[in-house]
View 1: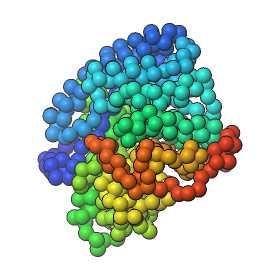
View 2 (view 1 turned 60 degrees about the vertical axis):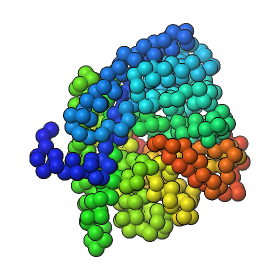
View 3 (view 1 turned 30 degrees about the vertical axis):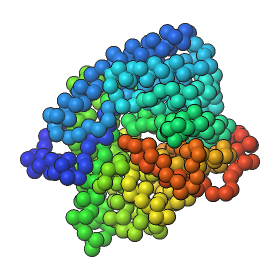
Length: 454
């Protein structure tokens, strides 16, 4: 892939003035050959393989960043879902595996390691059961390990037994990490229609169709898109807006693929995908909310928000698809409430509610992301919120997720500071009604008619 002098200068401007970056280089590592009847042996194999495969990731990412002048913010590892390799041991406590992953991640210097995961959208194996039981302890006792679970899909429906149990897991995790504002829940997410090549945490893991190892890249660029729209002005129509976003996403994606292919080459691994997602940070100017307001709503959450978010997400996907045949992961626009200063401001101003956020997830990349709720929120209320999110994904044949954080000791309107990339959250009000009977019924919500395709 070659670049013209004009494109190089344009990239320099985007990096220097518009917060363009490669959000993450994520190395996927297949751990299926680490399975062993002895859990301690499994842990040793997991540690050894992650360290061996990931030893050069940080060095390579830093060298590429220096060579190309593009910041690579995070270096991460994603592994095979742990439930797939602990079955032979029959162990019920998998926290030792999480510790092994955490130690390996620290040894190679990555920010996070994803894959303490289970797929339970149709039912539980004994290993899945062990993962669920171990998540609170794993999140409390590790720094870098992230967990994810698949609770539903368009083809399978929604496993409501798993949704109800996951609600209890969230509350226990919040309680176990109460001293840090329930921070363990920030490393924990539930999916409908989970994807196998997601480079973003907390849901990063690699599925059974992936290679022995694979390098996936997540690109970002809310500041670049916002600047392009500001230069465009407010007098043009929405077709011009969409075209501008599409062209900008094209440029960002080309840079992401260049970095990803070069990183894979230097690591001696397979290049996987570029996830073209507008992933915000708490940094001023790096906000998806600012883009929505630049397109045409007074405040994120105001009437029209879902429409402009749909335009934005679609244009980003189209621009990415034009630039690369390897677009994958989630791709679109993320709306993590605590990680986007514009979203934080919209919540503080009363413009953005939990109900509006849920509506927005029908058209964005993922779903309810980094949403703080009161620490005393009942499990049945969490079940209802998660089930709604899974249903949006199931019916619309898209990936949706829920990363909810009950904040111990905090109520609606109060603030919790997590710092760094996780930012600041204003606790949302889930309302005074819940879903107690739904929580207790169990069973499965059947797959929708559109799921029966062949």
